[in-house]
Image (cartoon, rainbow over all chains, first blue to last red; front, side, top):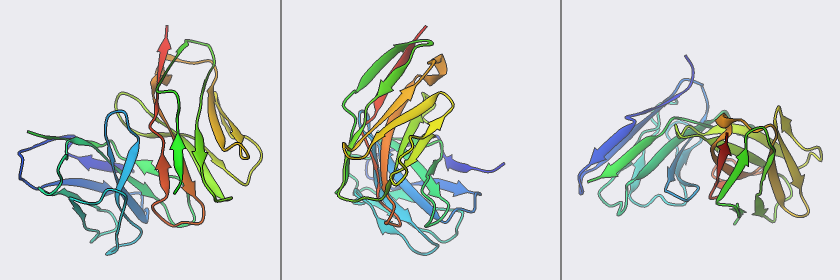
Length: 113
Length: 116
């Protein structure tokens, strides 16, 4: 079954803790993205990766880190340096440089207690 | 930097009627893509329709169509014969054709309610 999976669906974290959100895809897409969504706002880009072992900061990268060791996986770590991490996080993929459409995973809701 | 504006935070439509959602954008580029994404209560983002800026013909996908006015930088979405399942947040998005990566820019969204 092809697609993009994100886990967990809901995540709770205590203040001061790092937490990692998973994003896996079996679409063989080259590019992967992480977005943050807050109520009443659109999506804001955190990080993106065009190829394995390479990634770039988006508009709101502070307090986040990523890795891209495998084509299929692009985990996002929310560090304790992120001041307001409670949000909905969406992972997306895009097939290649010449394609334009993004496809999204189901998202992870992170709540900081 | 490009920006996308959706001036209608909320809209409602009667089932089986037609509704139009507005989107305007600001860019200095001439070649780009525009998208409408739907986010139902499940929060899964679903592509509704896409438009290539160099194509003059408006894109259509079944009950969904767009009115693309390049000079006015306007990209509205028309939903015909509205169904209860159309209730969702709708996001307008822009992507530069010439850029590899990060220039997907999203508007703040319009919440559409469909009344039975």
